Length: 153
Image 1 (cartoon, rainbow, N blue to C red):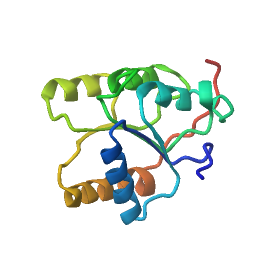
Image 2 (cartoon, rainbow, N blue to C red):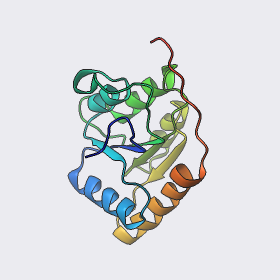
Image 3 (cartoon, rainbow, N blue to C red):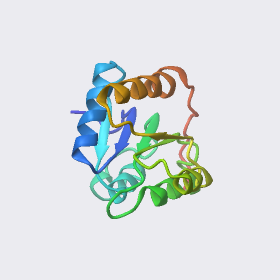
Image 4 (cartoon, one colour):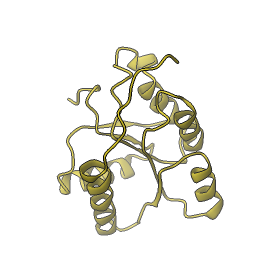
């Protein structure tokens, strides 16, 4: 089981098929074994801000990157992104939108809300493997992330 204080990737995805394919692609690329999956926007915010079911989690231990779908139940991905970027505890956290929408308004809104990257999920698994390999090599293996320090909410 993943230690919730040592998560490298937070995958925020409600579609079970997309979760399975993304996890398989990450595993095939040997990028990480510290992945936590949440299935709606409210759960993502609870995880990141150590609330609700995650109230015992150390709030200063954030993932290296959040992979965020836009179309989510309870709280949509755009609102999750806005809350992450507006909170001083998480505003520097890298958020990669990984979604099926290639529509310009969605892309524009995501970047306006603070997305660090916007990727459209490919339909073919081989294409997804390549995308996840590139994404993982950059955000997990190469990118130097900021040091998160605890601040009052």
